[in-house]
Length: 338
Image 1 (cartoon, one colour):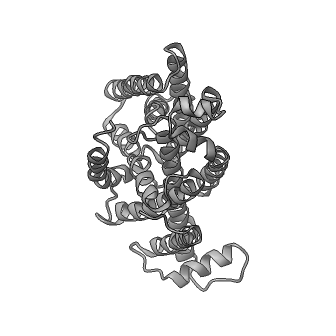
Image 2 (cartoon, one colour):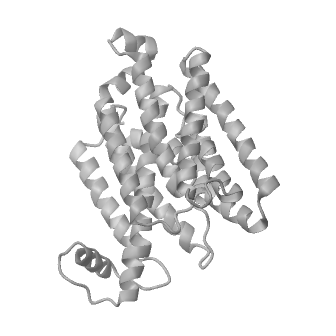
Image 3 (cartoon, helix red, strand yellow):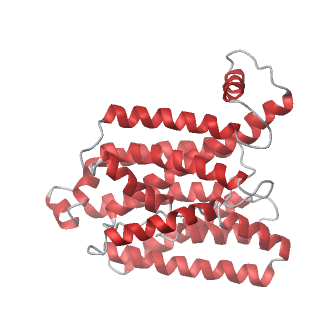
């Protein structure tokens, strides 16, 4: 299949993302038009005023807009992480959570919420971030001890993921009451409710930084497609490159999970869809994957918050319902490789 030209890919992707954000913000109990959305955004950016009431202005700017933008940022970040990890580990079924980062973040969040560690001075997001870093550090330690090869990294990630999942379950079962269990479970399944502009700014900065780093290693990632030995022959410092990129993607995943919880399947499925459009070259693939992931999660989150209105469905549940059939398709297409 012939790759789509770059101007059409990037230009079309950006237009589609902007239209998706504007359209998603209009959807909800309060009727708001796209023109209203743009007027509110322009007013808050200093370009004129808006005729909407303060309540409707708050619905757009303080509730729906940060949530929709964070959905776009999380979708882009998770998709980029999945692309990089599938290339580094040469495994089409790798995703951002294969290093146990999600499980570690879940444990950190549960320890703060249920056990009250920090005495209220530590937020859920901070606890999740610390837990994610702790789990990833343990993965690096185990994989280095076991030899540092690609398969050892994956196996170490699986072991750490199971360890922290067990710790999370133990804490919830032994120390949480019914209300805490419900709240923690909703967050563990992925939730963008209650996010603010601080979350958007933080996650956007981390996504931009990580994407820039990964683009700087685009040619190196292309070399990894032929295997570590071939990459080393081409002059790539395999161990150093893998450590840098794994740390970058792990830090990004930790930041996203600490703000939005564990949202699965985005980093697994979207890279394969993007490759069908952009080809295998990572200089083209990474930006296209980011745009595809952003558009995808914007609409998934919109569906999650409206399909059972006024009840909200965790975002991770919707991505799983969509991602599982896609995951089976990936398994079917890669069965000869795996």
